[in-house]
Picture 1 (cartoon, rainbow over the protein chains, first blue to last red):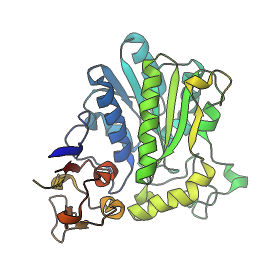
Picture 2 (picture 1 turned 120 degrees about the horizontal axis):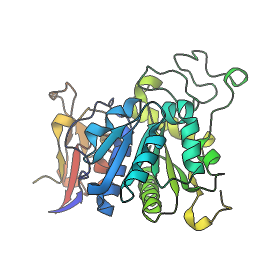
Picture 3 (picture 1 turned 45 degrees about the vertical axis):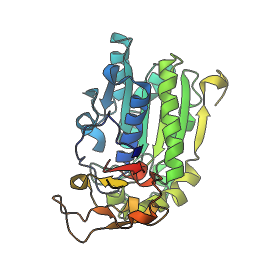
Picture 4 (picture 1 turned 45 degrees about the horizontal axis):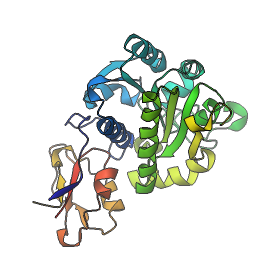
Length: 251
Length: 68
């Protein structure tokens, strides 16, 4: 029989610690598929964040490092510069990248570092128990905003892809969703393009993946995917915000 | 060999494959696996079109899909 879908080789054959239905697993598979397709597993180095994905080094079958909270782009910068032939990606959540790591991600993009960042935006702090994140939607209930996030108190949720797309060093910036087969197919193309951008030496690349957190949202997995599409996509529009072919003035 | 092969020990019973299967041929088993979850299984192989959607959507890399 012809194999239609195979588990990517760049993933370790083991169970993850993620909650049932968590879309981290889908993002992991898409990154691993890109590594497999490009045939670069032997020279790929990933950088894990602090957050639910901290154990990513146990799940990918390539070299890995784990960074201090929010500092994955800085660590990835060091690896990329010390090993010019390496394919380097950072894998970060929204609490890691958009909050404590906001400076690192902006300056990595400013420098046009030839790294790829996979940014998982699930609008909440997952590992620490569902607190409000910079990406939490206005009105969204979390353990630290039990009545819903208030605009006048916490400001508006940060749109990382739009912000980074104003930076000339950011060669490829896209936002995708992991909530349906069609969205996942588009997410796969975007992640592959981000790695292609790095391999072409074009500069910094980032793919923001709208993701679910069924446990901390208090929803069943499918219900969470529906909530994502109805609530997150209207505020976080999908698409490519900056592409290498668009030149320095796009975005 | 089955068109859809489940690495049942890794399944967390999230039901994402069941929901997105266009032919509704996957179901959750009554039994539980070593993790304590009800694993997904191919309940109606005859109607399976080997599209691969379940494999691509599974968050836990449980599923591989084959076409005769």
